[in-house]
Length: 102
Image (cartoon, rainbow, N blue to C red; front, side, top):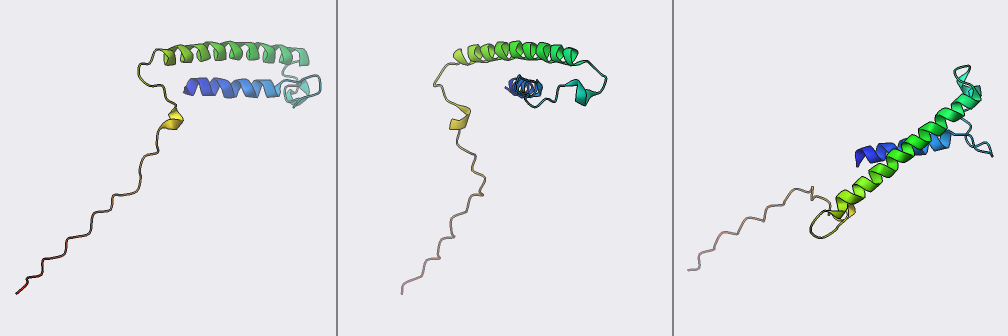
């Protein structure tokens, strides 16, 4: 699940960096990167990275779905688990001493 989360966040980040027809965030342009790569090289790198991350995302999604399918017993979500009681237990009050009746 943790690896899936990291791949998802990386995929979101790479998609947001790419320059779209409308301009997008435009972070992946050669203007901000100096002479490291040309605009075309950056676009190719981001396109390849997106494709690789998308493939990994799909494989992880299918793997997690198959692993969850094979679990016996009632199906429940992680969100269904009640929170742990963190309050300390309060001891019962001490019993009153018996009063002798004469």
